Length: 304
Ligand SMILES: NC(=O)C1=CN([C@@H]2O[C@H](COP(=O)(O)OP(=O)(O)OC[C@H]3O[C@@H](n4cnc5c(N)ncnc54)[C@H](OP(=O)(O)O)[C@@H]3O)[C@@H](O)[C@H]2O)C=CC1
Ligand SMILES: CCCCCCCCCCCCCCCC(=O)[C@@H](N)CO
Image 1 (cartoon, protein in one colour):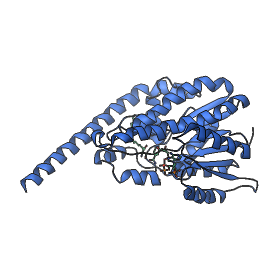
Image 2 (tube, protein in one colour):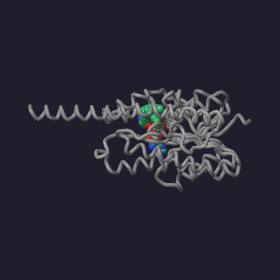
Image 3 (cartoon, protein in one colour):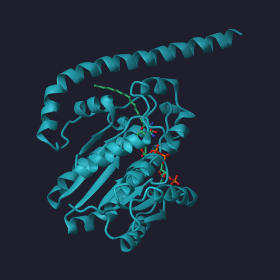
Image 4 (tube, helix red, strand yellow):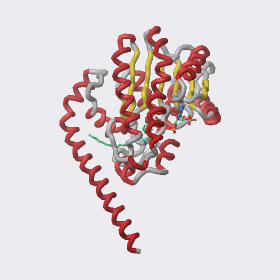
């Protein structure tokens, strides 16, 4: 198999995307980092370059908004391919999150999150797919979230944008499998990144308590797992024991990559559904307790 490959990472200047770039660079890849802010890109480029394993490796930076104008995304990706060669693996990691109660989320945010998280993954994919099909090889990763497998309190704007990636991935995978191109959807739990720190500033108590079920991962650990799964051509990439259960439980009509995976889904389905019902019960009681507490403190404020 080919050892040197060319990888393009959107959202490569921060958090999970940056760690994915580093993980690939450590394996000898050529990297293109895509994000908007040029300073953050240059800073990330320096960090990635420190992990070189030979002196031929290159890190290229592209500053572009992946969600606004398709023709612009297409032209910068074309330029990158002219410099570093055709993209072997595209990692769609650019994204943004926010949480809040449905009626408190500004209406524009619903559109914004669909643009960045969904269309921002469609555009780069559309820009590389023709060349991948011609070469009859390639890998495409979509970074969804555990919130792309279950809808939770506070994620009425975010979850749909992550669920959408799975619909895209399943449809696309069926089209391009005969061309030897494999799609991976990654479903990380909360991960310790600048993005999560930003989201936490306004996170409702309910969302925080529910998310604690799954704990917080380190981005380096997430990067290792999702890169391994993408290289192997696994459709599904989950992180941690809760991630494993969630993926088995929500496998639906998504493709399987091995007989073992299929057998595990069949055997565990009933058990995991049983466990899930207990989780759902506990989430509902968190939501009810928080509501009662809020009403009591409101009533107390009035009395004063
Ligand atoms: N951290 C977490 O808890 C989890 C995160 N995820 C997902 O993983 C991905 C990465 O998250 P995380 O590492 O936390 O995020 P960060 O906020 O740390 O990094 C986001 C990256 O995306 C880039 N980006 C954002 N918007 C655009 C845009 N419109 N065009 C181009 N680049 C853009 C940012 O650069 P710039 O702003 O300069 O453009 C930055 O490089 C996201 O899709 C997120 O939804 C999934 C599960 C858990
Ligand atoms: C058998 C059933 C098992 C059920 C386990 C349920 C676990 C629920 C926890 C969900 C955590 C959601 C993380 C969202 C992360 C994210 O995308 C944002 N932080 C982005 O910044």
